[in-house]
Length: 130
Image (spheres, rainbow, N blue to C red):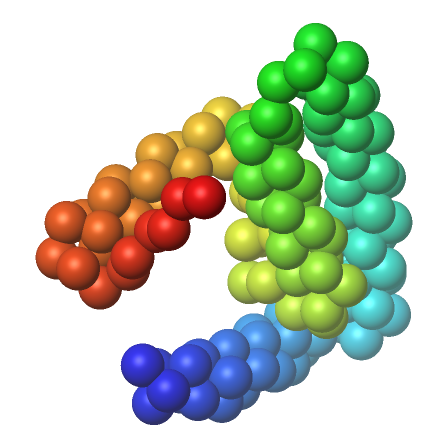
């Protein structure tokens, strides 16, 4: 697991750098920098909008006396998406933007739930209740 994470932290910046250099060769340095800035601005606005929407849903859930589990998971995914958008690069921007889209978050949540259920069944994860 640690080796995979280490490989990810080495491979992603390496690929991002190569991609930015190649794009810079094709559209120019100024346009490439403008593209990075624009994706950051648009992504920041999208993250803010989605975050405020999710915050409203969490408040509504709490007002009804419900646990805002879905809202909290959505909030975490938007936070991760926003962090990825702060990282310069087009691949991280694409992944970050995808985390800001509600239909994509639905797919990610379904996948994560299946993984967690499988881990609980295997005994890899133990959940305690009080």
